Every structure is written in C-alpha cells, then in structure tokens.
Image (tube, rainbow, N blue to C red; front, side):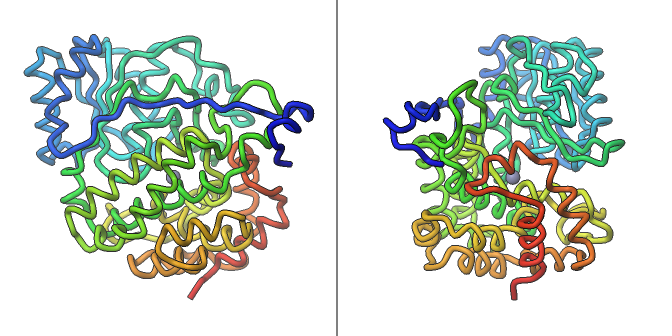
Length: 414
Ligand SMILES: [Zn+2]
C-alpha cells in the first residue's frame, strides 16, 4: 500500500525520510589528499587495508606515502579475501586490535572497504562476530557508539561501499551470504579518484558497471518509503526523493558511458565512477531488492564458473551475479517507473535495454551462462529466501513461487 500524505498519517504509514549524506571528494589526483585528511580526522597510526594485487600497483605507494608524509604510522593489512568471509573479517579485526591503530584507510574494491568497516567495528566494540550481524543469521545488536575514523578509497566503480553503512561477507559454516548494516559503519569520508579505473580489465569494468546499474534501478523501483509502517526508520527506508535524484543521474550517465567505459575510454570510465558514487549514495538511503537477493544465492552456489579477467577461481563476481537476474525481475515487476528508467538508459523497454547492455559488454547470458540449470532452481530459491531485508524492500510480495519463476525466466535471455 502506498499512502498519500494525509492517508499516510491516518493509516500509520511513514511520512518522513532521512538524508544520510556522505562526505565525498571526487576527481583525478585526489588520492594525494589522503594523508592530510587522515591527519585532520585525528589519525596518528592508521591501518591501511588493501589486497595483495593492489599492493603491487602505484596507488598503494601513493596512499602509503601520503600518510607517512603527514607523519602517520602505517600498519598494512593486505590479506583481504576476494569475497570476504567470517574468517577474513575476524583476521582483520585481530590485526587492527594488535596493531593498536586509531584509524583506517581502505584502498580497494567493495571487499576491501567492507573488511575495513568490520575491522573497525570489532576492534572498537569487541564482541562475538554474530552480535552485530543482520537477523535472522545474527543477533543484529545495535552498534553502541561511534567508530574510529575511516577514509575509503575505492579502486573499482561499482559497489558504492565507500558511501554505505553495509558490510557483506560469506559465513562459511552457515553457507550464508549476510552482512552488517548500520549508519555507524559508513566511512567518515570517501576519496574517489577515477584514475584508478584506467588499468582495470574490461571484464571488471563490465561486472561492476552492471552492479551500479542495478543499484540505481533497484533503488528507483524499491517500495516507496511511505509504504512502510511508521516506527523506527531502517537504513533501507525505500525509494524517496533523495535517492531518486542519484538514481536518475546514474542511469542517464550509464546509458551513455557504460559501453565505451568497458571498451577502455578513460573519460567514460571517469563518468561511470561518478555514476557509481551517485548510485551508492542512493541505495545507501533507499536499499536494493530482488536482483541483489537472488545474486547472493547465485554467487553462493556457483560450482565451476571461472570468469575471464579475474584471478583464476570459481566465482561469480557480485555485479555479474546481480546482472544475470535483473532483466527477469524488471520484466516481472512491470513497475510504473520502468518507462522513465528505460528512457534514461537510452532505450524504450527496460528489460530489453538492460539485456542489450549486458550483451554489448560481455555479461553471461542469464544464470545458465554462469553454469546453472533448471534443476538448480529450488536450491537457488532456498538461498534467496533468507535475504528478508532485501525482499521486504521489493515493490510487490516475493513468495517462493514468484522467486522460482523469476529464476526460470532468468535462465537465458538470448
Ligand atoms: Zn551491489
């Protein structure tokens, strides 16, 4: 039910929304500012969280050098897993505790930034891992207070983790992809330097670009904030006037620049990085829904798919796992905003335009393209149902029957 303003008050529906704005510095060369900013945030000894492959790139030395030039001690943690796990979150928290740091600088993709958030949380307010993890998997205990300063420097244009209060990981023993969500996890500020995307493989730009596209589309079509009962306002508060601004502009940019960005055009890559920032701010306020919920099942149950352009491992990169579900979900939802979204993306029909973009940038053809068959659908549905935080944000109810038909329609598109 969506209420108008007066009916909303009478029906006990939500009538207000919160703008949780992030501090963002965007532009070529801004990584050089990290030392001065860390100093201004009060850091004297920083955990520099990154991964092994980034440590070999010039950006790492630039960030470490800028911190040292500002007289900040640097303790490097480079053991972030490609997809973080309970074990890698705990290892990072142990490292931060033992290194006695008073702040965090993360340099990497979503996995790195999420790991820095978790390390900051568990080093600041020690507790068993399950304490702050989303229910029903964890206890969802509120974070007791402010965390240490964290400056996030993203190196891919996708997850938006630098502007959200969400950290996602694989809980290996439970075979569940879950996370921690709280405005307190949001990095203190983000330094978004689009130069870092110039050396990314095309396949990484394609997958992370589809993640951005789906962040914008899901936020734009999420259940409106006025459809939620009044009461404590969750971070995923539904589509609202603030998130709509970022979604519209991100979709417009992607319609023009996504394909040339994958083909290697530097200006287009810079534009897609800006779209990623805008879509990140948007979904951090509104929340995503079904394609993301389905993606956790797809990524969690992969058997043998090895994507080109990534380290040789069996995995479906997050953006790809989201993209293979998206056309099926948007066709099913037939949302009143589809036409506007399609036009912003430079097409006429939303699902058709999303499929066209997938083909143009080499995304696999549906869930069959990443190794699933119709026989896997019951397991994929079972893996999606626990994502209640996301499913509840959909514009219409998601039963197991609906999810099964969505996976069926997502098997292949062309
Ligand atoms: Zn995503």
